[in-house]
Amino acid sequence: MTRKIPRLLLMLVSLSVPLLAQLPSRPEAANEPLRPEWCKQLPRSGYATLGRVSTDSAWFEVYRIRPGVFAIYEPHQYEEVISYLITGSKRALLFDTGIGIGDMRALVSKLTNLPIEVLNSHTHVDHIGDDWQFDHILGVQSAYTQLNAQGASQEQVREMVLPERLCGNVPAGFDVQTHSIPAFKISHFVKDGDKIDLGDRRLEVLLTPGHTPDSLCLFDRKNKLLFTGDTFYPGPIFLYVPDTDVAAYTRSVERLAKLAPQLDLLLPSHNFPEAKPEMLVLLREAFQKTQSGSATSVANGDLREYKFDGFSLLMAK
Image 1 (cartoon, one colour):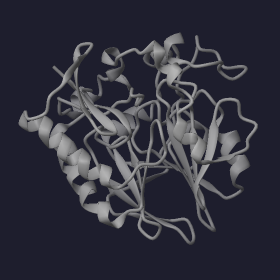
Image 2 (image 1 turned 90 degrees about the horizontal axis):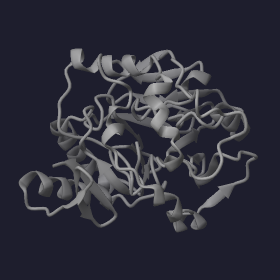
Image 3 (image 1 turned 90 degrees about the vertical axis):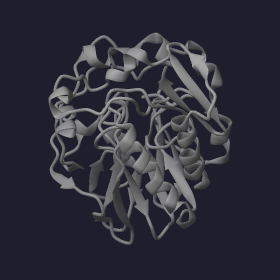
Image 4 (image 1 turned 120 degrees about the horizontal axis):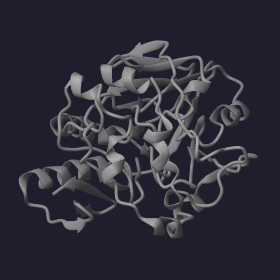
């Protein structure tokens, strides 16, 4: 998925379970705009204002966003994926494991010595790349999730490591010709409203289907933080992929927009790890305009792009 001003989210077709079983893990890639010039946009200026954590990783950059909250950024691949390590006094939760190019397990083991559980914001391959490295994985009980937990072949993910999608070098030992996503096993299922107690920090699971059937957000109510996954991020939100259910996305955006007064910060999963809560209200309004026909758009390849302040919506013509 890419949120570059390349990033992806959802659109037009509601999926049935039989159809899901026929889909590769990232079917939207075939229509995704290629922007070879994206690397020239880096480094994003906002990162200079964040507290960077020194690591020996040549692939990941780590930033401390709040006490106990680390943003793990992958700036060398077009998706600019951001995973989050969230720590409490007893446990840590890794929200997504990235694209699978860097060694996520080695990195987080140096950031905390707490037991680590994994929960994916959704199971597109750019968020589950290193799930296989972990023993304790939480997930949504759905056919879609179980399908993607089978991993992805080299053929399914080869476009992720095209030269146009990489900025700089891949880590030593990584082979772009054989890259694939290994299968992983979900050890515990979560449902809407579940609380994940890390010790002195409780995270509430909010199921927000739309981008994918298994999309979810994490609400840290005490600290007024919302981890939005791909339901919102700064950049083009892709609303044309087969995984997407527009009606479900409408309901999810409405739900999140109502939370805005209770929030201090949004933590998206692409491009930049901070956004203002009012962006959820703007997202709701923008999406409503595209659905009512009152928004204007410009051509972006074989797609239409609706541009708004701080993000855009990419949809099929």
